[in-house]
Each structure stands twice: as C-alpha cells, then as structure tokens.
Length: 149
Image (cartoon, rainbow, N blue to C red; front, side):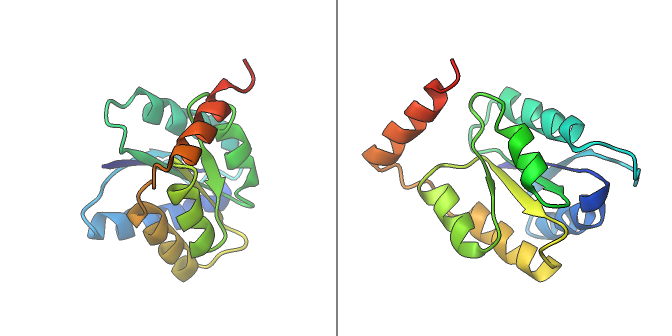
C-alpha cells in the first residue's frame, strides 16, 4: 500500500511528522507537497494533486492523507472527484467507521484541532481497518458514485 500525503501551510508541520511516523511503520509514502512552508499556499492545489495520484494508481489499496487547518477544506476539495470517499476524522471511532462502512480512501485531518498523538491514533485506526464489504455498504458506495452525474 502506498500513501499519498499533502498539506497546506496549516498542516505542514504535522505532514512531516506523519510521513516520519508512517515510514517508521514501513509504509511507502509519497509527499505531494507542499515541499516548503508557504503561508500563502492554497489547500485545493494539494488536495487535487494528491487525489489525481490516488485515482491514477493501479493499486486499489493505496490511500491518501490530507491535512489543513480545519480538515474541512481538504475534505470538500477531495470529495469533488468521482471515486473519492474522503472522510474528516476527529477520533479513532470515526476513522474505523469511515473505512469499515464507507471504504474511505482519503483521510482528512485538522491541524488546528488535533495533537500529534491523536493524529497517530486516528491514522493507525484508519490504515488498519479493512472495508467490511457488507452488501449494504457496497450498494451505498455504488449510489455515491452515481451522484452528480
């Protein structure tokens, strides 16, 4: 599994820490940016670059992580792409549910509301939870993919 990760200036510090954490667990991590701290950068750019890489990947187990101030902007931007199921997670239960029930493929995190220990716990829950693939979950994901035309 490859993990694509991106952040704006608000999530820049945590992005670097998340990358180090994931690499210590032997995940292959692709840092999509921003590569330098730029207080004037905009989250939609990084969300779209991360999502484009995820969607073009041949490995359907690949995931993405996006970090911005609230997490909301990244989540909104990512969910504009067909086939993306981005979830903003504030705790391990949400992370579990987003994977187990909804087969989320993008984890969005708030740099303003979470500390790094919470981020590690949420990320671990997210990455270690398989999709349950219950018929009702599969049906709902198909319905999501048909929204918006």
